[in-house]
Each structure stands twice: as C-alpha cells, then as structure tokens.
Length: 79
Image 1 (cartoon, rainbow, N blue to C red):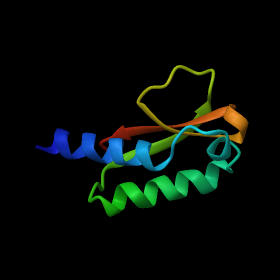
Image 2: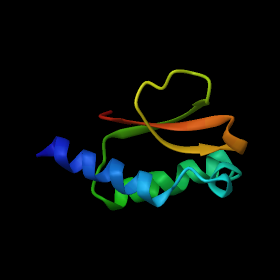
Image 3: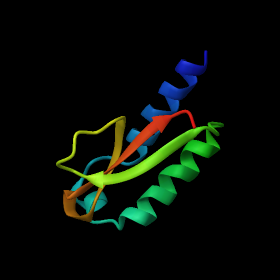
C-alpha cells in the first residue's frame, strides 16, 4: 500500500511540474521547495529531494528541471 501511495505522489508531482521551458527557467531552490510542499501535502513524510547536474545519472525519480535544463531534481522515497 505504501508503494502505491508513493507512486501516486510521484505521479502527482511530475504532473504538477511539467518539463517545459518555463519550468526549466525556475530557480532550483524555489522549485525544490514547491515540490517538497506538494509531496508533504500528499502525506509522505520520509523522502528526499536532491538537486543534481542534468548530465549525472539520476539515483531516483526525476521530478523537475531547473536552471535552463542544466539541473534536475531527483526524488527518493525513504529517509
């Protein structure tokens, strides 16, 4: 059940922040804060979001891009 809830949250976050050029221009810290708030709103309390270079292989689910597509925000469930 927990895996389903987490999957729903990830889908909701991805849907809320489409990978458009407008979203890519957003400041990474601001976008990370918005995504974090949405995930918490959905009842998930153990997760991490990490800002990494877009060229780095993601160790989780990519839930956003920022700084003109140079960086990505990666979601990992658990603490």
